Length: 224
Image (cartoon, rainbow, N blue to C red; front, side, top):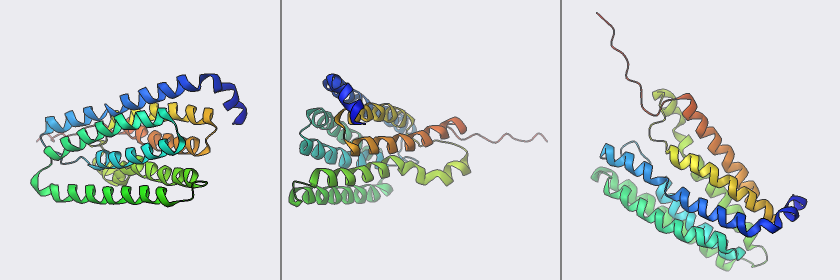
C-alpha cells in the first residue's frame, strides 16, 4: 500500500477535497428519507438511529479529524453535523407522541456515549490516541451502517425493503470509495480497513434492494 500511497501523493489535496464534497453531498441523501416520512405522515416503520447515530458518529469523526490534523475530514464533518441535526429534528417532528420516549432515550444514550468517547480521547496517551480512537470509531461506524441488517428477518418475512434508507446506503457506498482512496493516499490503515468493511456492509444492503421491492406486495385476491 505504501508504494501506491507514494504514487498518489500528488493528488492528495484533490482527492481529499472530492471526498469532502461527496461526504457533504451524501448527507443530503437523508432528505429522500425525510420526504418518504413526510408523505407517510409518520415515522412508523423508520428507524431514528441513522439520524441520531449519525450526529454522534459525525462528532467523533470530527474529533478524529482534529487528532489527525486533517482539514478535509474536519470541514466535511462540521457541515455533516449541522445537516444531521436538521434531519434528527425533522424526525422528531413526525414521531408520534407514543414513540417520542424511545426517541429521547436513543438521543440520551448517544449523547452520553459520544461524550464518554471524547473524554477518553482527552485523557489517553497522545502517542497512541489517534490509532486507538480510530479503532473505536471504526467499530461504531460499522455498527451504524449495519444497523438496518438487524431487521433482516422482518425484511425477509415481508419480502420488502420498505424502511431501508436506499439513498443513504447508495450514496454512503460512493463516499466510502472516495475515503478508501484517500486513506490509501494517507497510508492510514484504519481509514482503509474501516472503509473496506463499510463497503462490504453497504453491498449486502444494496443486494437486498435487488432481491426485494421497496413496497410490500399486496396479495392478489382469489377469484370466487
